[in-house]
Image 1 (cartoon, rainbow, N blue to C red):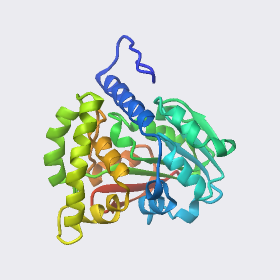
Image 2: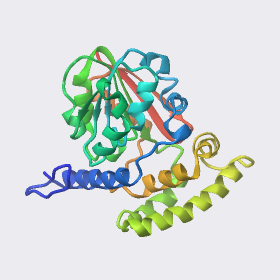
Image 3: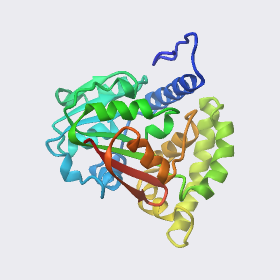
Image 4: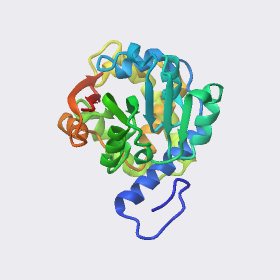
Length: 280
C-alpha cells in the first residue's frame, strides 16, 4: 500500500491506489489553501451542515472525533461550539496545516496522522463526525466501522455526503469535466477554476431571481462566502481523483452496514445528505 506521503508499494489494489491518489490530491490542495475565512469557518456554517439532525448545542462538553480534518476547519468549528476534546484524523500532508491552524488549542486535540480506519477504537467518543470526506473514499466501510468502534454506547455518528438526488443537472456538466480536470497540473486547473468562478458569480446572481437548479445552495451557502472560498469550492469539486454522489438508500446503508441504529437523513439544500446513526 502507498503511504500518506504518496510513496509506492507493491500489490496495491485498484481501490487502494485510487485512495492514495485522492489523499495526495487533498494533501496538495490543503497545503496550498490553508485558511478558512469568515462564514466558511464559522459555527453558523457548522449549524447549517449538522442541524437539524445534530443540534450545535449538543457539541458543548462532548468527546468528539473528526475523520478527515484537512486544514482544521471543522475541528475549529467544533471547538468554537464547545467540544471538550477532539481526535482529529487526517491522512495527508495537510496535517501540517491542521496542527498550525489549531495550535492555540492543541491541548484539547489528539492528532492522528493516518487514514480514517486508524481512528483508535476507544469506545469513549460521544460523537464522531466525517464532513465531506467519505464520498472521496472508494471503500468507506472500514472507516465507518472504525467510527463505530470509537463511539461509546448510545454515541452518534454524523456524516455529510454529496447527494445524487438534486445534483443530476450539475453532474451532467461536472462528470465529463472531471474526466479532464483530475489529470490537469495545478496551474491549468487553477486558471480554469478562476474562469468558472466568474461564471459562478453570474449563476449566484441569477439564483436570487430565478428558480435555477441548486438555487438554495447558491443563495444561502456559496453565495455567502467570499470569492476566494468560491474558487476553493470549485477547485475542491474538480481536483480529487475520486468522488461519489450517494443516493439516499446508499447513504443509509453506509451506516446500517456498520450496525448503527435509528438512522436519519436530511437532504441539505437539495444537493447533499446529512446522515446520523446511533451506536447500540
